[in-house]
Length: 368
Ligand code: PHE
Image (cartoon, rainbow, N blue to C red; front, side, top):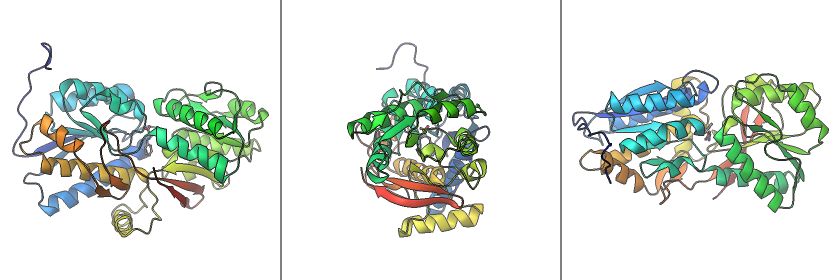
């Protein structure tokens, strides 16, 4: 179904494999990009050393600064200038949603290791992911709130500049209500925007509602400040979040008091005793002098899955690479077993982690 306006494709290099990476290396969500690229580089070492691929992979990292506009520009540049074989990225769902239509239109495979919003892979058949979706993550946290913490009056604070936050809020709200809990207000009543730094009037409004649990599906920079300000206002109700809290910066931003007693869902726990996870955690910590967070593990797995597809693709063209990604089944990663389904999503376990001053502590693993 090539349309009259589709640009003619340049042949891909057969001497090397060129992979474009679109990640937030600077800006408010920079730890996502830094951890991802660390994980990807570790994976590339494994791949290039193994000799499994006949050709070397060359990685081109583009910094999207955490912004949708920079994300689409980066995808366009990687396709038009660098003639990449495939793209890995991005993290924030709104960023991936901005770049994915360009990859789809050009029929260049794009694999996101981390974007969980349901709409991401609906963009088209060249877009896939190696992580679970928010339809799962939101249910995990609603159940945790209602069944494990035994909370019944939830309030949701939403980042209205984020597709991720809005989508995850909806799923949590539906599930929490279905379980018999009460939602105070609606999902567009208590909102903020990325780059906000003063949440005190919002938090005063929230406090007056007297919730027994607060769901905050945000990213770590705003979440960290909000937790700190909530503590300063004398709030002691637990906050719950999703994978967007998973950053080595969260503890520092919230401070040792405000960080305690909150819970998130995520993709991976560095405390996992599984031998594959342990050896990844040890090698990563050795290389980067920091324990890996979820994004490090997701970046590592995403790159290994992409390399595995490249190995199986036969002649390297975009269609063959896409088809090989789609056939990924039972790939054993550090974030779990990865099978790409017909909707180009992966069904995987989630973990619930408690945020403590020392880092994220493992609470439970939830099977899909
Ligand atoms: N799931 C988040 C999103 O879609 C991104 C994210 C993944 C952030 C993993 C941190 C860790 O926006």
